Length: 198
Image (cartoon, rainbow, N blue to C red; front, top):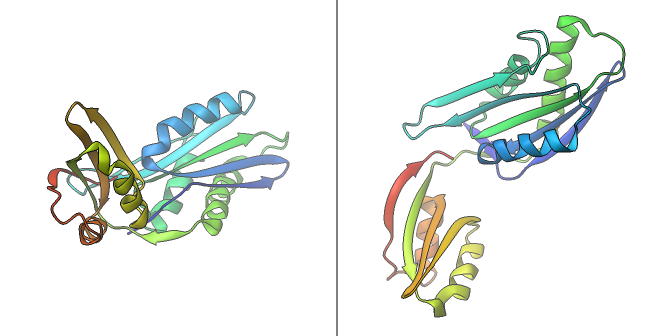
């Protein structure tokens, strides 16, 4: 299985219709969908497909044709993701109709082409299971902690500022956690909250 670490956009044109494909991490799917609806109020369709692993490591899939003929948009996009064995990602394709009908076969090929185009520019990486950990530090250690997180490439974290210190919640691979502990935070107590396939 494979995934992405950042988001990508690519555009293809087929018989004057424009297809703008957005490849995003699954946890950014809802936000991206709402943003695209605001940014493209005149778009004819915003088709999507996604695949992610749930807490039981089962693959969950979903797609939407968003008004296109059934099975001619979302499913072809999803099939590309399946073929590349991608997980924890979503693709959203904004379509502007160019005045020339593509037919059902042409439409399916166009949506698949848009997804393949955005995948061609994406940095695809091996999927590593991520887990959520929580721990606490003093206020004095905030800058040090931020530096350590950056050093090992952990970008997903939340902080809760309490009276007696800071409660951190991070999402990272086990390898990243071990690296961080090896960089001077050996005494830090990590509490394993839950497995998280995101």
